[in-house]
Length: 396
Image (cartoon, rainbow, N blue to C red):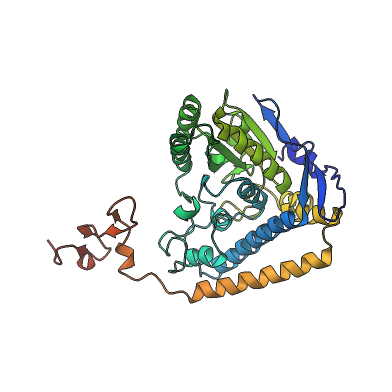
């Protein structure tokens, strides 16, 4: 089931040179290219601070998603809930490589992307609770996070619908670019199950024609809901799906590879060369959503094998230890601190009030595109018709 890339890099020899401040790492076998020459560097240098920052973000993501699992089972979170644990190296590598001015839009599996893109555990979990402290003020829920100030545009509940939005963001970046300077880029992340959506093909065609700084990023976790890639797609090499559009396949369980790979992609697209397809080879530990046990179409042995051989957190921990940056005892202490911090932020999220009834009527119609102010519509139909809102103050 797992690709040759995943099997190769899980056994990859890590060549690290222990130093007081930096170490070099070998990424040979982490990338496969399509229709492009060159490629990312296969020898990279990192400091302890750089890797520790990535580890802390990834471990916070993992603990947050495990907490969401527990809170869902306790019925404190309702409705749709798609967890990201196992895929943390993808979002972390992308975030490390992008600038704050770059645009990011993703699918409904968006909790950890929202966290990476300027959110907090309190604002993410609060949104799942439907409380006012949430990133979308408690009115969006699991699939609809958004932060314009951090250039994070969702969180989209419709399969593949975020990709045309990404191409539009890329168009805006090209339109607003200053002559002679690199363009900011837009990235749209979607799963292998969405990769054959017609709207994605149309977006890719326009992005190629107009040479937009657009990154089509497929997070290939090997299953479209409960259907394996072998059964739901005639093409399994997703990084080649753009045909004439260049592509790259990256080991999505190795945060060093996702970071270096995305640096290369951002530089290529931002230089005016047009779009690129990126396939992140990754794996989700939970089912498609909380209603899916995740074991009817794959067995527990497959999940356990991936955890034991390719877990992204174990990879970065071992990388830092082998580089002489840290030891197991220090990492255990950091993990303990993060677990405590996550618990404290979840507690604050629980204490936050629900959105006021009045706030539910806000942000329906915008007064203009700049002020952020909104106006009430003439009529809002409520489930109980007698409690509907009329601007005139009375029913028709």
